[in-house]
Length: 146
Image: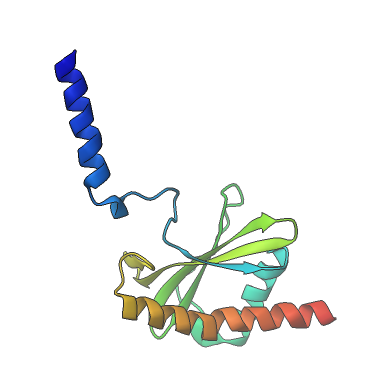
């Protein structure tokens, strides 16, 4: 019994001193989250309007999210010749979380806040905010004023 207790104690210590950065909860634990004060349906419409007005942001492959049974609505953008995966999800009543998930190419999408260097992270977040997020916010404001 003492030996088992000792081994259990060693196991707990080794886990607590190991690199815990490899442990993260959820499907998208490293995503950069942005809160929008609009219902998800309006956010999705604004995203689609931004894509329609900015053809350079559109992805050439058909990546339309048609699965309405999952927790996220996925959207993809092309920014600086890189694929960017995002998702939306209702967070509270009439509020939506818009998340920047990963950047790269098909089959090699690297997670923000995890698999990019800090300079790459900063650069992609800045590009995303300028080319996508700010435009979505403008669409949302314009649709609210009508």
